[in-house]
Image (cartoon, rainbow, N blue to C red; front, side, top):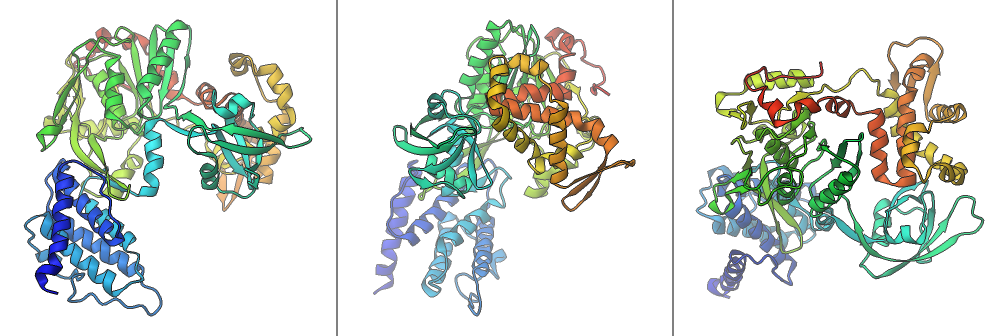
Length: 633
């Protein structure tokens, strides 16, 4: 065979694939696994080069991908297996000296290395090697540009779509048995009367004992309209119960809870921004308005972000028409935009307080930044994470995906929130754990800000870019509360098991007394002395040692926690509060967990509701020129 005849088919395939990808079509169907792997590699290269927010160096992309490819190859070496790559297309010794002209030349070199290994070492997992090479390319990009395996893509997409199809239960596998925590309100299981505490012992006439969490999900989820049979053991019921459940759409809510804090103040907690978030938010706000809401606390703490479009839609609700919400900028002009509100927001006249912390990122920072820059409300809490990058997701030939950062976002005042990431992904991710106390952190951060990163709100207050959002009012994390007992309790599932057994034994009596009046439960329910004794005995059974003498601090050793009786008596209220919240979750559902938790453990919220007089645009404008650090200390 001549060289031309050998190369022609490969070149033809590459030309066709390149034309398809340039046309924006993501799905390419190929039969050969090797061709699919190579197509995938080329597709990733091209998506990065054509869309990444910053300049990309094809030599660096190729070098990192080849190093990762060879490292993964060596990781597959076992026993006497020996791989010789010196002087072959897979040799990485002289990559630093390469001067590639474009991605086509880089791809050709990768193809040569790939085929050398595939043809000479038939036992190697070429799919895995290709994945590792692709991951290597991302090492030179920002921390939010990532590769997503095909097996993870569907689950992640469900999360962002805001729904999946199944039977509608929250469950835990306890002692090898599927235990229903709660049936999702309005879902198929709820409509059939499946209850908290039910044990699923069989699925479609096959034993369900010993299944893993993934096994359960795979068996119970399925297309809408399909049927699954479950056999249930219910406490105090003599014989098993059989249910035929028709699967349906199950919402994955992005609002953890919403309720009235008092006669005038509403509270909405948003856990992420997915496809349904704006609709959920509007429905919750309307419900709270009907209950008399005149002002709103919106909680973005530990909200990692999500869809930019949903953040914009929610931000619009707080502003009049034509208010600037956010800008995006990129080296590609097609990703540049200035976004203004398209309507008068339904909440534009309500006083707003937004709660944030170091876990608030991306879309959370967009909404909070717009509120702060326009002096629209008060930002309360701790400095946010600092993610100001926008990603686009692209599907690859084998249904895996990549997320590529296409632009940076800027708040209305012009500040970029993104914190530095030059020291590597691990340092970037863990930076929030190295911060000082909240007030000290803010003072240090502001003290180091160059003039180029200082901006002004509409009213003239100073705000800062380059490292998250510094709140208008900083609330220090309460470090005076001992967490040792709580951590021990939760790590050993004592709270969950205690509540589970309580419901098994007293569930009917409890529901008769409390189920129709959650608010009365919040204000009046308390654990009895007998309940407390049972709970403490469970702690002891799991490894807690209680001494009569004084111990300055709890002592941790292996799986044992040693505390004094005096200390336990001082902190037992925390455990009881957590168990009360767990009871609410198992009886009423997850939305009811948070009001109880907030009653016991929410210093930021407690401080925020004292600040309504400072949350108006007029009050915020009056602080222009004053010292920037305002806190609860």
